[in-house]
Length: 158
Image (cartoon, rainbow, N blue to C red; front, side):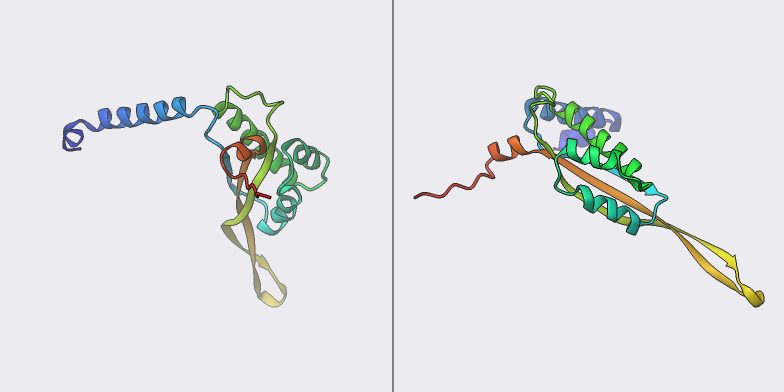
């Protein structure tokens, strides 16, 4: 530990990156869920939550179809996020075929983001405040097949 403090910062950073790469290589195919997020989307969180509730717990291919044919503006952004999460899962689990994997939306939540405060003119020389809301979306996808093999299986003896 003391020898690591004597190293230059650039060397310590390189060693940390190599350690992470070794961990990923050793646990390839067993890393589990993948998390993707979108930040500061200029859509109100309430409207985004309506679309997020629609795909929560669904299989990835069903969720993609729901989003593709939904008329809401927020569904386009969530579709892109889901495609990104699937691509990230593929990169993390290169030895597993995407067709054989049973991917599903494990978790999705929408938080409020920055709020732009504007003024709108009102009658009799007054002004009303307009809040233009944004949101942060976090999406977690996982493989149902791998989830059962990792030990979350419950067995009862008869």
